[in-house]
Length: 304
Image (cartoon, rainbow, N blue to C red):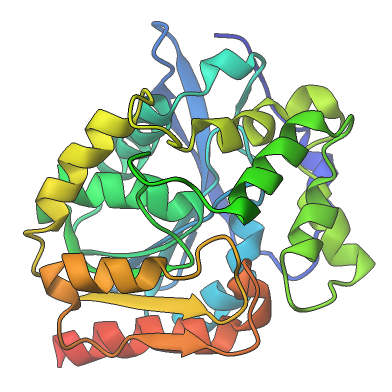
């Protein structure tokens, strides 16, 4: 598998994101290795919160959340998905599959970093991948916070908003990463922040991951990932550890998914679910303090 790696100098002007990162090798599924970039922040002996980003962002999306969680005494692990951020980027779109992305995260977080007693915070693809990991390795997770995300099987038709996004992602000549995050945020992002979202992608050849991810979301019952996601739901319907939904009130992509998660997952019963006001799809840009507060309160309450 041929990969690209964004030159480190491309990140020189990224504002407010100075946490150190490490590179974690994982098998590329072709007999070689690629590297996943992982931010680690906070006390090494503190409870671990894994922050998983989605499409087309990178761990920079969580910068304010990470600051707040560390201030609350927690340890944060925030990987860049393969094809995003500082992680290696496969050159071919067909190198990106749902199953491979699950495997790459499993390899980095569990096989290499051996994380346990994890609190998952997943948004967008961070939930599509994170909830698969919860289902496949429930013993690794102490609690879950789902934020503007879901685990689709393709058995129900996707909404018009997602289909419009999917078409746009395939038809636009140049994928405007920073502008997409700006448009999906209720906050008007400043130029320096928009540029930070563009930084991992010096040209279109680096964007095969962001181009392909919308096409990997199951939208029909016979999608390649549908069976595995159905199997994951069978486990999630028995998952009784704390499961909290923290969705925003302004996301047309995932609106209503929180009600399904709360109904189907036993661990969601009696939990302090919250709707964060004034947030778009990328609620980390709009409601970072409130989102971090939900996570910190859940961890500290459960450990009290």
